[in-house]
Image (cartoon, rainbow, N blue to C red; front, side, top):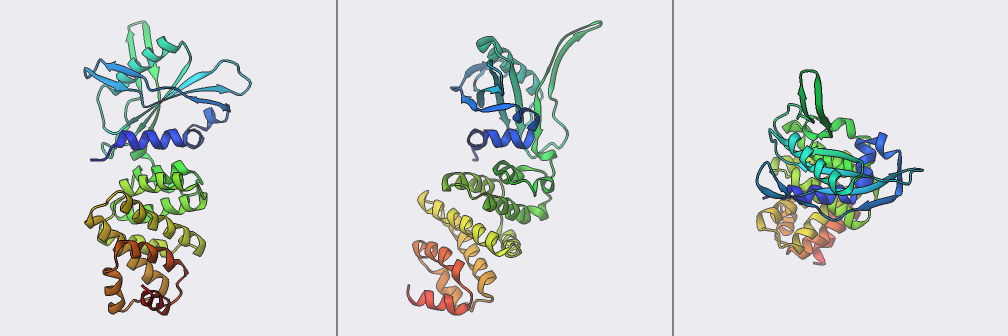
Length: 306
């Protein structure tokens, strides 16, 4: 089972400013970025479900030139819920009561279906009297077109494109584009793994899609292609560390073969066989070495020294 809450919390906490820059620039542009302070997790009894709830992300910030701060509350919602807007109001009320500060509430809806717009208002009114109108900023990923984010040099775009509205036939292309954006950012290894792992979780490809994915990588400029191949090789390394199961290992082995074909042309069956039986540690080394290959001869020479 995918731990959606953990994945989104980690992504949004690591790239909080970039998240605001991408989706809420009117707020991001006013912030004193040195003032950002992540607050401890808040636990509330959820009156709608009878269960305890942990607030996903609570951040104290200040606007430039202001002495008094305000809170940004971010929730990542991975499934649709009829009374969710009311639940957000309950969280707002309790946070406001505790901190007595202005609160900017944001929800990231990450489910695949339904495609209809989710409610983002909770109101109470009578004839002649509006008692309450509570609103929150809503980012519903399945209503966003991934093509609109292709030119965004943003780690958040690189990750969240994987959860946007994607036609089935576009899945390999979107995965390649996510990694292309990531490759241009040149982040440190930990942040690169975070985003690439997020993308690989939500765009796990089957064998035929992997082939199309490799073809899409082959269309990239040489430097971008090299960096993307380094990232895909790191998936294999991370999988080794985590004891990844054999079926996924075979998928990585298949990807290495496709990268070889893209790099040096058609590979003879005899050489494919040698690659297919390589121990995983040597396969990892091959994934790095093939970035310098220019012909089948280079592969033969490398295998002769294994």
